[in-house]
Amino acid sequence: MIILLDAMGGDNAPDATIKGAVKAINQIEAEVCLIGNKDIINAKIKEFYGKNDISEISPKLTIQNATETIEMCEIPTQAIKHKKDSSMVVGFNMLKEGKGDVFISAGNSGALLTGATLLVGRIKGIDRPALAGILPAYKGRLMLIDCGSNTNCKPINLLQFAQMATIYNRNTFGIEHPTVGLLNIGTEETKGNDLVKESYQLLKEKAEELNLNFVGNVEGRDAFSGELDILVADGYTGNVFLKTVEGVGKLVKRTLTESIKKNIFTTLGAIPAMPSINSLKKAMDYKEYGGALFLGVKKPVVKAHGSSDEKLFEFTIKQAEQFVKNKAVDKMIEEFENKENREMIKDKETIENKE
Image (cartoon, rainbow, N blue to C red):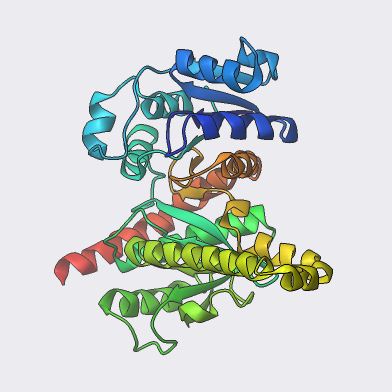
């Protein structure tokens, strides 16, 4: 297995990507190919590890040269079209041609989603791919889908988000009937805007047919109870929710640390509780959960956080290996390309067009 890593993507690249790959390489079975400017990467290898070649660190580490970089401020479609030798485009083409098994990037989100859709291609039967992020929950984890790729959605999109997340949870975490909730401002089915109310009815109607364990509307405060496996939202709402959760996590960790270090008495008093405190810190750290999976395209793609450091890249690389091993993409292709699913989309679009 070969993991393709965009070495030039992200706020802390290439330092964080290189260090993350080096940390992860002995914890995984796969090879890691860093894609980016070879001269820059080699100079960093010399600076960080005193080696003239990356293979001296591990024979499982290689470099694929790419002379261009897509910057965060660039217009996605233009960047993908004109920067053919960018680390992102080169990575997508390698993935498409079978020269790698999964592609990771912390670069321009819009360009990543555009490239994945246009260069790698959507799975037939899926209207829109979506980003699925993993978040901590009480004694478990929560998958949030969509967490940023589709700001304007239709009910059919939210239904398919639930389907994709269910397939992933079933094949990755062994949860046969993962619970699915719809993010809303109240639990009543009459609450929310038109999109949420229509999505609720569609999920309720199709749950049995599509083997979805739909439990209804879920308020944000109840999402982390441990009773929910999947939280469905449109990309705009989901991204606001995600960033808020990350911010609260940082606030809790910072406040807790400052409280412990306030004076000698608080520090001494915290010593017996340090195992529990460290456990809480770890549970609140989104870096422990890797990147967001881009579900709905023909090959595995992972979006790492734009501000990823070496620790987050390390976890994301390990997560990407599991993404390939569990064959969730193959399962999605199998389910979504069947005739019944395509007919359902066609019928729904016909109804929407009439309206």
